[in-house]
Every structure is written in C-alpha cells, then in structure tokens.
Image (cartoon, rainbow, N blue to C red):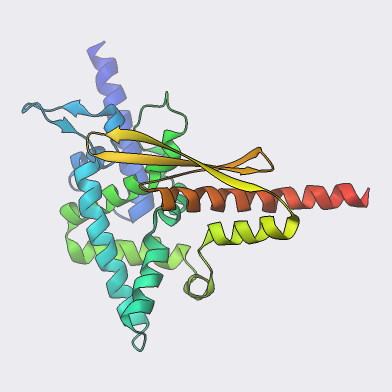
Length: 249
C-alpha cells in the first residue's frame, strides 16, 4: 500500500513537471512551489501553524509580476504611445477573461487542483492559477527568467497585438447593440458568493427574451457581466451558421 501511494505521488510529480516544462519551457527547480501554485483554496490544507495553504498568496505575487512584465514589454514595443494607451492595452491582455482563455489554451485546466464537486469553479480559477504559476516561476527562477517566460511563452505566441489594439473589448456594449438590432429583450441577473475568507465571486447570467445564455464570473459585477457577455457572443457566433443553414433549407 505504501508503495502504491509513493508511485501515485511520483506519477503526479512527473505529470506536473512535464506540464510545467511544456508551459514554461523549463523544468522546475523547486517543485513544491508549482504544487502550491496549482492548489485552489477549495482544497486548501492546514499547515503546521494552522494556516490554510493554497495558491492565493502566489496568485497575488504573480498578478504583480505579470503586470510588470507586460508593462515593460508594451513600454518598449510602443515607444511613442502615452500612459493611457499603454494602461488600456495591458488591461486587455491581463484581464480576467483573457487570462482564463489563455490558461485553458496552454493546458492549466489539466493540472489545477480544486473541488470538482463545483463544476463551474474551474471556469473562474484558471486565470488565477496562471497568475500563481507566474508567481512560482518568479520565486523559482528570478525576475529576468520569469519575464522571458511571460513574453516568450504567454504574450508573443497567444496575442496578436494589432488585433488587441484595434479590438473593442467592451463585450457588454457589443451584446446590447446586437440585442437592440435584433429586437431582443436582454437582462443580466447577478448573484454573489464567497469563495474564500476574504474574496467574493460574482456570477452573471445573460437572458435573451427570457432564454438563458452565457454565464460569467468575476471579482466584481462589471467583470462578471463582461465575461457573461463574451460567452454569449461566442454562443451566438457558433449558432449563426446553423440558423443560416436552416433558412437555406
């Protein structure tokens, strides 16, 4: 039995090492940092001091490091743009919706540890886990190596800067405009829950003519509505060809 437990632990370690190597391009030096980075508070365990250990502290650190790395990159990429422009573009890159999408693309959903009794939880924690991994890389490899990871592995391969600059990221406004054009009645239902001792999570549900559409999540109502609007627009985009085909037949 002890051997089976050791083998299971080694298999989990090997899986995490392979995932970090695939995501970041290097093997972890301190694997414990990455174990903690992928541990959501819903599965947090008490340490010897009676404190709950999860990825929240690493998420806090990673958020700051990620913001600094992206700010540095944009500052050099756009030498003649003002502070307002740089702040807006950085926000579009590191906002919760964008990070959730990016985290899923690079496979963080396969290594995050969370209470899977809550099926919706994974949808809102992937971006947070990505930030925690950035924090782990910073502590494990230092700022210079971490910045290289952020730019070379996260930003350059996954963001078209020209598209980011020219895009309108106000998904709620886009959805409302669409609903007005189509004569649809739109409403947003907001609910609030507590995900940890000091953190609230908001859920937004979009209804079009009383039909439930996208469900969004965020640390405030605005972000939850934006996320729900984005998902609704994606749903409408995928439904459109079906409607066209039906009209042709």
